[in-house]
Image 1 (cartoon, rainbow, N blue to C red):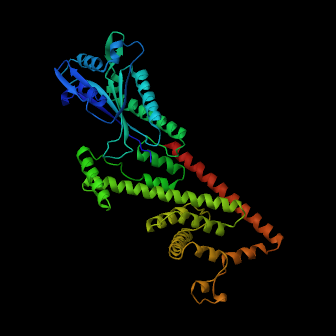
Image 2: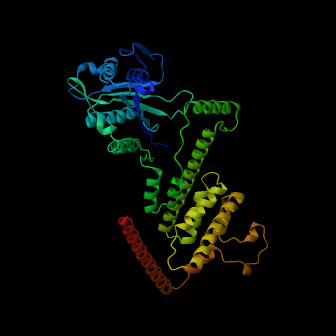
Image 3: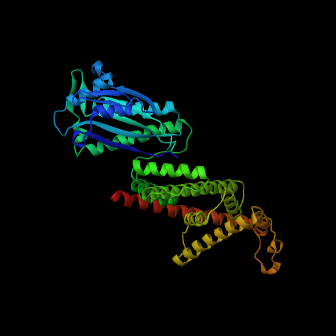
Length: 432
């Protein structure tokens, strides 16, 4: 699943860091820092897929040399606590090709050059050989001063200011999300990334009535493991795979991250099942099936997708029941309806899991519990779905037309009430 990450860090002298060392490490090159007299040699570094430098159109030619560029950036700063460079760290989607990853990274770098007039040094890194093989990422190192024909000039205060820096970075975060989503769409992927906070995303999906997605987003952001914990977890995963056992996190941070990822995977499974159920229900209704038989067909389609856990059963029942129309019902009736729908759905899923997919088919075809092993007299049991359908089909046409007209009228009244509710909701939102 595609995930979003963009972080901005500063290279500060007060922290003992230099632009020359940062540039050498990320590009895997050897750079001698003229200010410190030190040599930073990272030519043995592996996993660097591509590097390139972008500069404004009137920049001097020496700026294309990485060593000259970052030595000049260091020379332009005279204070002991100067910020000599800024790093934009980007997560790249594993779902797209290496060419597309390079293209969107270049487009992002070009926007930095155009927007701020700075020099941009890009290094695209492959996943660590012992880590998550989806972890493609890019390090985008930028100067903190504009680069013009005479060299480095004014500071980019728009990014340094507390008033404007946050807004500028947020706009660049939005651009990076847009570039990724375009690439994912071109690659035929359905997944999309979102740069907004979880709370903002949750409010958005709630306004659209997507209760399941809103519940999925009702969580804390995933914590970052850090180099030490990440290395420990990688070793444990490798050991578990070699020994054929289940991976169990060995650090507290690893346990939190693992639990969060498992929860997101469960929500994705529930969403897939719910989408299958909704699609099947729509197809069955369009084919002329009644609501009951279409609903049962939708449930069978949803439960046939692999193993169904108790948690999935409960949440699927709650969501499908919550999405139904409750117009004209009292609180007590709505409560009974929710409990009945939840219990009924859970019993169907439990029964199907124990008896196999044929059980629901027997019921639809009108077979009694007697054929399933129980002695139930026909006059004491409820009519089957098939019997109820036959009763409806055998009604006089005039009676059916009257009932259809009543149902259409009722549905129109419900739709009208829903439209009024939506208008009220919109008005409340605008008043904030």
